[in-house]
Image (cartoon, helix red, strand yellow):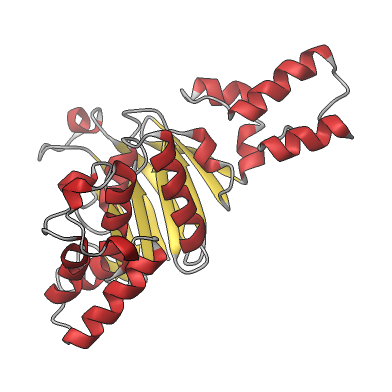
Amino acid sequence: MIEFKRVDFWYGEESGPEARNEEILREVDLEIPQGKFMVLLGRNGSGKSTLAKHTNGLLLPKSGEVMVDGMNTRDEDSIWEIRRRVGLVFQNPDNQIIATTVEEDVAFGPENLGLPREEIITRVEEALNLVGMAEYRNKEPHLLSGGQKQRVAIAGVLAMHPEYLILDEATSMLDPEGREELMKVIANLREKIAVFHITHNVEEATEADEVLVMDKGRIVARGKPREVFSQVGKIEEWGLELPQVTETALLIKKQFPSLFGALPLSPQELVGELCS
């Protein structure tokens, strides 16, 4: 489990009341257990990316603690093991790909772990198969689409055999096709490792095991997708939109108040309610 224990953070070295007025994270308590698909939603500037960088020690709390499987991110002796266990993928894949072929890029992490050649080959093969990029192993990354590049970046993290995959706005720079490709990869991975997907796209949260909402540096809501999205007034207050299907159902409900005991989150649910 990744645990945030009353974490405060602000940029800069200053302390005291004035620095705290610039807090990006405010008393964050959070648990990311193994084996779950969780989505963190929030408007731009709410602190989501700053929180992501705390999960593997890229940033350290000004106060409070972040623990990864019992290891404190402040502990210099544990930091490399923490970063092996917590794989972090950012929004721009071009900033993460460094090699001249897909295969070489995915192998970069395991090579730096000093693993035997046979183990590296096995890990690269496994990772490329998991993200559906095995047929592109000899391609030059700059010839790939945005969605394909992001899948290569994820494969590079998976080759390290992490326990947690943190996706920080990993779909934000992708076109709809690339976003759909990546969400299929996430659906496949959620059976194998914990996936913590940070986004402002509410459509991507409807299939999560748990949805969290962040606003002004705080976790302000947490629950099943239906529980969170049923707070219609709050969603707007938090600077988010409802899923399109849910928005459509609300418009229909204005004309036919007896419809929809529970607001639908998918087209299938919407059609099912209307047909019944």
